[in-house]
Length: 155
Image 1 (cartoon, helix red, strand yellow):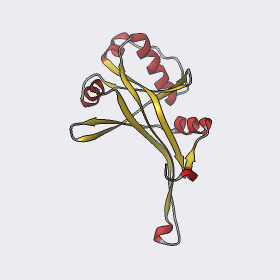
Image 2 (cartoon, rainbow, N blue to C red):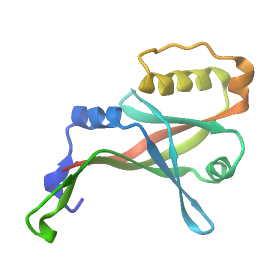
Image 3 (tube, one colour):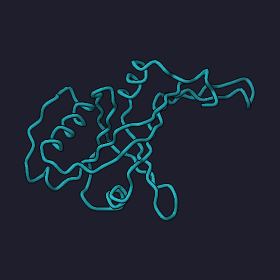
């Protein structure tokens, strides 16, 4: 990271920023280069590892790409605010951002899918346990990323 003065290295602070983000952009690669898709997400820390969970349609470009790739990148950000200056070059922008990558896979086992959906929903609501219709769960795709590397920046 070029701007070490903006790097956030405290794990609790990194998790606080991650918790406040509401959209995660998943970066995959296709024949034309980067393919980036914004997604709702959930996260959990287990056994010293960070896991991200996503959901979506069981068919489509995103799922096709995940099936062919073992790793993916991600980015999320928040707290966007213009910092006005006296001169053009004195303008800046305040933000918090997280970037990283990890091992990605489609979750097929029903119990693990339900767990992931509960993790995802708890990120957006105060409720931690939900009831799911088996047929609906079977129709959607649940994606799991084991984060292997991530960094956080704040200005």
